[in-house]
Image: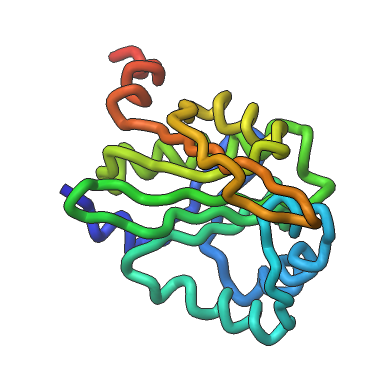
Length: 191
């Protein structure tokens, strides 16, 4: 069963090097700047042009969403590193989709893996999800490694499902399951 209170509560989750906090209006300008980066747009398949007003509205309304969780990724000093989300909640099957986008200066440092692990732990232990799935393009090998390191398994391939800059690319399907997560996550020793 889904724990609606855990989904509505928009938590702050703290890791060794970063903190996940509710996405809010204070993140709007940094988030908008990230949408302007051509490489970020390519890696996420973003074709739409966003205005700052679009992003300000988006950030201002995330806390009110009862069926999704949008969090900003910050370093421990509060600097914006990106954002991630659980979306497309399927209550009957206790599953959700996952997405993450990091600012260019946050890549290659393990931030994506740490942020993803924090969110998966919350999804499986607090919200009560059984499955979290994602799609990633075949050319985004750095993200594929980060997802595997965070506990996702490759499940399939949608051949030539993404057309970008005149070329066809495959979309890879990956998922993490609560049962596998629990088996791989050490239980704290009783004292």
